[in-house]
Length: 435
Ligand SMILES: *[C@@H]1O[C@H](CO)[C@@H](O)[C@H](O)[C@H]1NC(C)=O
Image 1: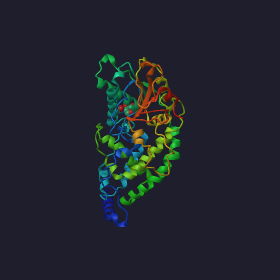
Image 2 (image 1 turned 30 degrees about the vertical axis):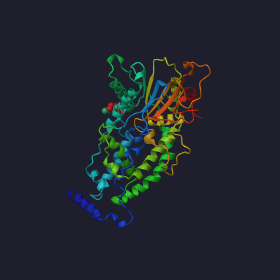
Image 3 (image 1 turned 90 degrees about the horizontal axis):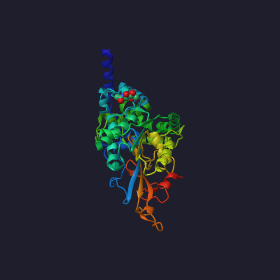
Image 4 (image 1 turned 135 degrees about the horizontal axis):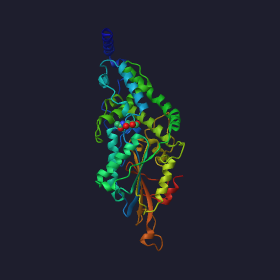
């Protein structure tokens, strides 16, 4: 055994002594400070932590003359550990690579020699500390904007039955209550739980038709580059597992600090360009799942949710419930955005070629903790751009009900809504939906 291991070590050293650059044009990988101007998180697609998507110069504001009288929030659970299936695959990949990893050839891989796979089976699929914080902070933020609509009795919370979603809903409630410091007597009711309906069938179709073909295109060149540098033979899935570790391990090591910029050493193995391919995979996944049909119209499904939304928007301003908060999943939310005509693309995304100019950026559309807020507003003076007064109208006659939609703080233009200005769409138009 001793002999064997010293043999292995010396043969690694032998490999290590072969100069990496001897194939001429081949460079190990294009590592040098490639995290400079691109926030790497923006290339993690649905595994990106929550960030606001509001333009830097735009603060949250309500058009003058308008008052919000109802809010509908739908939010994805916060950052999580890999699901059990993902976790098994990633762990296997990491251990496979550790087994074949040569001595000290490549600096970016050094850490892997003494790396103990840190994600516990029990944690798989559950929220990370960052994920709890993202949900809590959303509660605080919504309270700072909509406190006039938020009392214990005026808030109605739904949650998918999945553990991490329920925990996100609870954290959100805690965030709201902490912001307000409510007395015991005025607490928000626990979420109403909605049994998560399966979407595996739709997901499997998207996987075979779009995701896997793209993986077959983008992973082999990355694998070949790593094989060449490390003088090993990896599989595509090994490579994919290592890439996956970048967002998941990062979420762990940031330990609940949502402003942390720490990155896992796994991130340094890959280039920005390679992560753009990874992000394109997420885009294909969410774009096509967003367009697929769900087996049933359960309350959190795209059709189920938007049907409820229409009903809520039509309820009287005198209704006791002023704030609806639904906690859900990325697939469901991608579908809701599709039904509402958000993030529409001129052409379907290609599973053969990445398009860097595409506006379908999953890290802005369905990152962890992603949220859509649909505000219902009454505007007394007409919002800018609308036509003149109705004849003989008093101020009361003049007021109209509008809807405004924000996804991660970014006001959606709602181009399909006749006459929408500043994202304001008349309730009666909004309810008709896009063509
Ligand atoms: C993790 O999730 C499972 C359900 O998937 C749950 O039973 C368990 O309590 C969770 N663990 C923690 C620490 O929250």
